[in-house]
Amino acid sequence: MRVMGLDYGQSTVGVAISDRMGLTAQPVETIRRNGENKLRRTYARLRELIGEYEVERIVVGLPKHMNGEIGDRAERSMEFAKELEQKVGLPVDLWDERMTTVAATQVLEEGGVRRENRKEYVDKLAASLILQGFLDFWEKNNGAGDDHSDR
Image 1 (cartoon, rainbow, N blue to C red):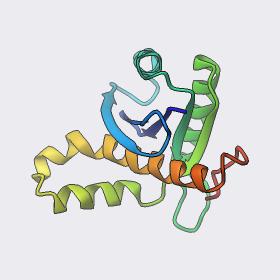
Image 2 (cartoon, rainbow, N blue to C red; image 1 turned 135 degrees about the vertical axis):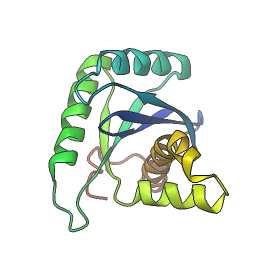
Image 3 (cartoon, rainbow, N blue to C red; image 1 turned 30 degrees about the horizontal axis):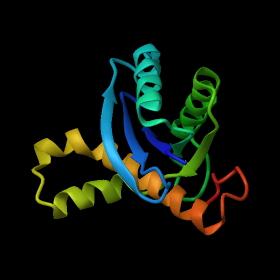
């Protein structure tokens, strides 16, 4: 099963794709848009990637607050996930993404990527961290259950 991972942000969507066996996540690209509600081209590009990679399931990062509460960003991610599911006709899971952008930035720093170049990579790397967490859980639990947003 091939899965797509998304890091939904205010003006970007980081995209990662799993291998065909659903074991590892690789960053693919960052989709940029002019504003948070400008999603037509984003959905079109996601449909292209879904077809190209034969994606069967999507996971969207859920940016909860550190105390586990749902804030404005998380609510927008939930709305995006719901609309995406309707537009592409695939199951969309939400995955707790606390600290993934921080972890992605740290990986880039440790890899020697210059600060001015990190913006190019951080969203798709965060998407791959979100996806890898989901894939690890999925494999461990043999795909049991559909609601992984609390993990």
